[in-house]
Length: 313
Ligand SMILES: [Zn+2]
Ligand SMILES: [Zn+2]
Image 1 (tube, protein in one colour):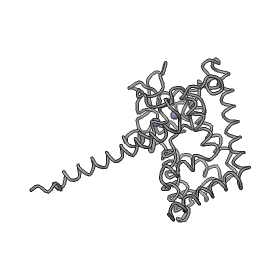
Image 2 (spheres, protein in one colour):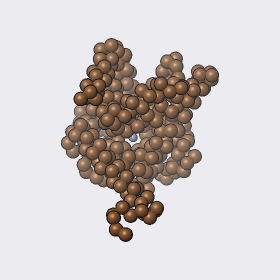
Image 3 (cartoon, protein in one colour):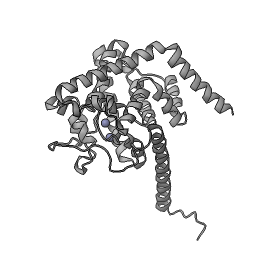
């Protein structure tokens, strides 16, 4: 009973802080993301015809897949996803974040010039994101969460924020590492961080920028669409978040030609009902897969050590 009261107290204080005390900040954050998305739509319309644009898909002809993208864009940019992340991890992500605040911060980046600090933070966090992304594809249990992002059947800038709340919780926990080791960049560099935040929107657009910049510096929409492709030869390729250099270094860059790509998954259980129901179903599938995986590992361990718990001799 006390635990329930405690949880409701925390939820109440989150809502009070985010939407009352810091309403102005929350609104400004949402407005910045909205402006970035609109800017990406405008650039996209410059390059591709209206019929192929994300602008048409979001504002005029919304599929179930795009409606999910819109819902998750709003959840992410209004801060509500943090609450969903805490709830979907049964408060675990919240406790890890809170505990991390009380740990000793090394803050090694503070000794560097500001620009070097911000670049180091981006490189380190992107390196961790690359490996986290690979693990999300490698582990059958974690794939149950990540497939929610891959279930997008068409791209628009907002698809960047289509992310299961529990995957968001994992991202937040992973990002504690660079925050503790080198420290968060100061607010002087918030524009740089926002600009990198916009990379996600460009990656999920139809903007055809590629060339050497897209191949080696910042992942292009072309290369990210390969990552979302249904084609077998595209699977497990182009994992980078910002910097494709990780894919080149670790052998996951797709070197082949890219022509037409069909996005999405062959399974049919996404984009059928509503985003909330599908999010809960994804979480149930994750728990089911995780339990099965634990049982399999326990069984393998028993066999390895020759332990028979069945009672037979
Ligand atoms: Zn992926
Ligand atoms: Zn994506």
